[in-house]
Length: 248
Image 1 (cartoon, rainbow, N blue to C red):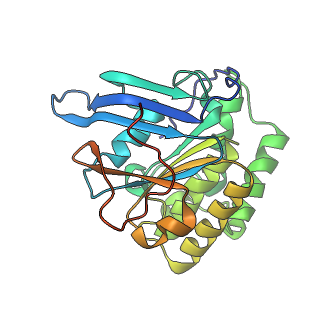
Image 2 (tube, helix red, strand yellow; image 1 turned 30 degrees about the horizontal axis):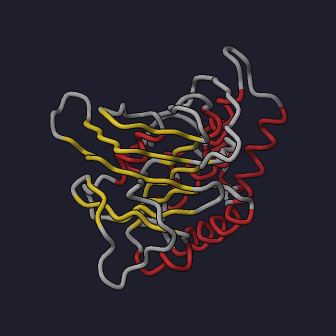
């Protein structure tokens, strides 16, 4: 449930892009079928990029590979000039809500606090500063009244906001968001769109898997289109923005 338990810190390479993926090929463990095939992606620091494609196109696979949750069969991933895992706190991954065991006996506040664990050494307990930071992001997402509620008692939209709060508590510079606006209520959608706008002003780099084609031009600097694990050209008339794929 909490993939960022290791504590590794390495400085970013000056002038390096936030993310550079070259000729990436990925297969899920135990299978021979390739989930990604020769994908390229380059995202400058502070940019917001959409991953676009139908279910099974490879969007989630790409995010998991960048997060270090899936190994690359071939190709390379470079994050702020370093390999994946060189600095865990710099990258935060927000999975799809259905991938979390919401029966896990933990309160919303403690779930969000797990975003601080990557900053702690082994066997160290969260400090008062960590708890306060968690409370700040909980309030930022309109969840203060629910912070002691068990996560199983939250609505779908509240669960999605809790996951985003956990990612923000990590103070990451690169956020990987897997369908954050999928099947959420209007209040959650409004809060999350507003927050993504604030992250842009804070120069956070955000890569978002999305089905919402209507907001691509207003919310993103560029888009990578995927189909059957490969990058494809944008459909005629579709938003593309800055060039992010097909690296030289």
